[in-house]
Image (tube, rainbow, N blue to C red; front, side, top):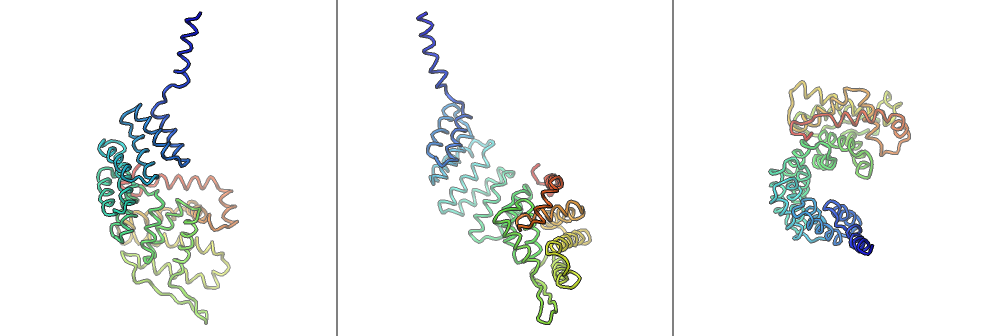
Length: 343
């Protein structure tokens, strides 16, 4: 009987204090990181490495927590380990290294790292946006725009890329509008959504003024190029028409919806008629003209992107038509916009 009791005594510590798996240590570390306990998180990740020496998840999380601690050199050291592995986390390694270099005040070195990362892991699309942001800070607009376009061609669901592209093209109204509409399709609520919606409204009104004698003056932006000048003129004419008696009975939302649809349809007709190609025509115009051709989808779109205007009309419609919203989201998710798009 004494021997049995002794055996049980030695078994208890193993059951109670048994070693966690690497995955469990990482989960524990992530919880600590999320609560702002970065040093404790790193300790947990290091325990995971004791269990599984080359655990990429643990190495990545250590680098990430070091970035949060502003220990950028330590973050770079662990990012380099991921890069040398040449496995699943290589793209993340390049991203963390580039980000750390940028924080260290070495933007050009960061750009070089982001470019290497894109060459090695072209489908890790976070690299494109980071390249764009760092290039933008150096006022390299050409590299910024190309990085955004390349990233969106692979991942059209990165909302921030659409928004930055819209800001870069603020003085090219048609292009800016297309990117802003796409941003709202992905992020219809929030501070940036509100700014995007108001920017669309102001873009609609550019070049259209009403004189003291009630005459409507229309001026065209000479900066529009790449075949967009016709759409620019049409947009201004449509906006000018909203000042007439015929349109005064319509609500601002109705005018917005009608003008937007006409804008999409005109662009689609130009693309088809003049065989226009290039990023803007292939990526944005084709997408929005196809959307506008489906009356039900388009109506849902106009309500969906208007969520942040605090309209009872919009809120009520969306609440009653949740099935149509799901249909729109499914259509967007399944639409193939580029041959390089990640499935």
